[in-house]
Image (cartoon, rainbow, N blue to C red; front, side, top):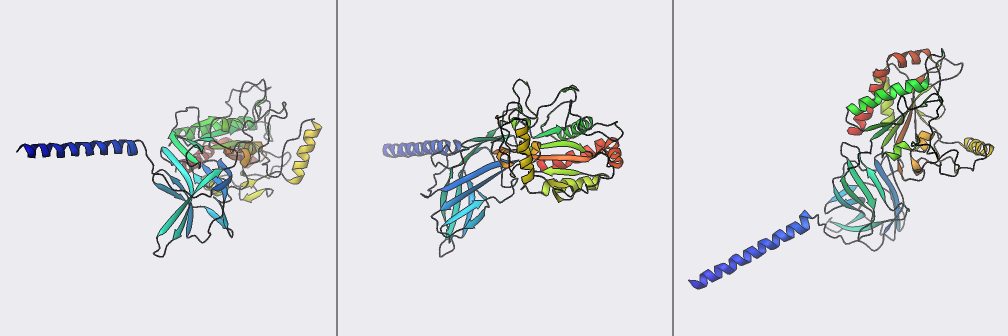
Length: 436
């Protein structure tokens, strides 16, 4: 009888020890976020370019010394589970080049990634004779010089994503956590002109662009805020006297952030600069013109134009220069405009900027997009000021909206008498797109 009790005690002790070991294993490996180690290949993917424009990350890379007779290839985020992302591939004899395509505002969406650490790999599948996939994993070696970036998602998910390569693999990774920075915004609305800069004036001299853009921007601001988005205006109604100029960039001695610097300064994903057109002595030209960066996917802006046409009495402009589609325009510097700009700097005795045909002509698009849109206002000319984000690889997706012509009586009448309707249509489309 004593032997049975002794044997039972040993069994009980063994069960308790095993249970404790299981609890320790579970707490250490699972509750602490243990991720099983992947075996990676010796060769690495060289990342030559990566950037964020709007809410999407794009990158380009090349992998040498690879058997190109693979069956599948993708980019994966790995945290114990795998999250696959399709990439565009150009296949060579012994190498592959990959990217997310040519559209700067499309790529890997950063908006719906849960908290945690995610390692990035190129994953290549080779099927065996039974059709089973054997995977090779390749490290993403960041050779861009942009070693670490911080991105903040739209406030309905409100995440902070740190992008670096600080891990044992030496591969690019995301560290995703809750955002506790209250000074981050989703959208910046820029009421065009202001202060001494009145913009265009209606033919009868009654209406001034700077006042109407402020009223329209406030309508859009209020509607977007009501929809749950965090919105920042570049200027308030009473922020500038009639003899003051709103600096475009950060200028020494001026105690505010320049209008083109604000969007990146507050971590915005989108900026909409609100304007009204006008032509001296011409009253027949009318309609909507929305200007964009070059190389984007135009689905959003073309959808906005169509929504305005469907729900308001506004029409699209008949202007053909720089036209992409009805109501949509893209204007980079032309060769002649580059020469004129350089000559202008010489005439002012400024040091020449690195302006090129890769630079967007409109500064509220160019300078808010960093390297993606060809920003170039560094600190070489103190009189102009500086854009501290001119060489950033995080860009704000920018649109400049010319909402009609004050020199046209039909546009003027609609804008003045239906401003709230017009602004709410614009705001609702933006909110539906961002929050969907």
